[in-house]
Length: 217
Ligand code: MHO
Image (cartoon, rainbow, N blue to C red):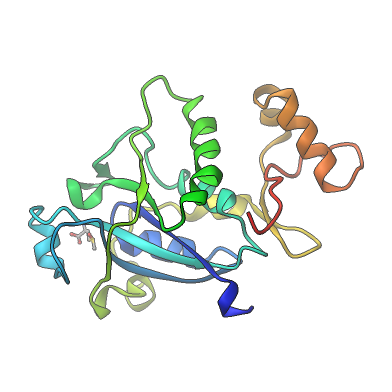
């Protein structure tokens, strides 16, 4: 992997211990770092963030190889580990610190993220409670928060890792999301169905792939 080609995206999804562990397990992710984003002070401590007066969200910086995994796939998996309609409560945790958000550093990333959010929105009657906003600031958290679940197996974790099993690695090494054929047939629009079918192999669609992004988007 050429480090110069890495891209980054910031996911806030409740307590960062589990979010960091989750993304670090996705193929194509180079590293995941726990930190504090979009607050109104500098260099906050964990205690200051917990005071809920500094405006920071526990956030994970994900650096990834866009030739292997797309922002669309990462965003799709993010929505599997949060409650999309609960803005400031994730698992047992609540408040500004635990709010849900996707923070980007390149405006063009919005066009990869927004269509995924639109698809998820179709499944809910209330509006999605996930902020999509530019990253304003990010401070890595204290060392003891990094790789927390590796250092403390069985430690607090609000995340279910089972949705990692939805990921597939194609023959060409790129990562996609598998969804059941039944869901494809019932819920995807004809356009998505066609695009997906044509993109993979030119063979009749087998129901294996959802993500049809060109890597690099
Ligand atoms: N409920 C967890 C959250 C930890 S996290 C780093 C705890 O208080 O241990 O926010």
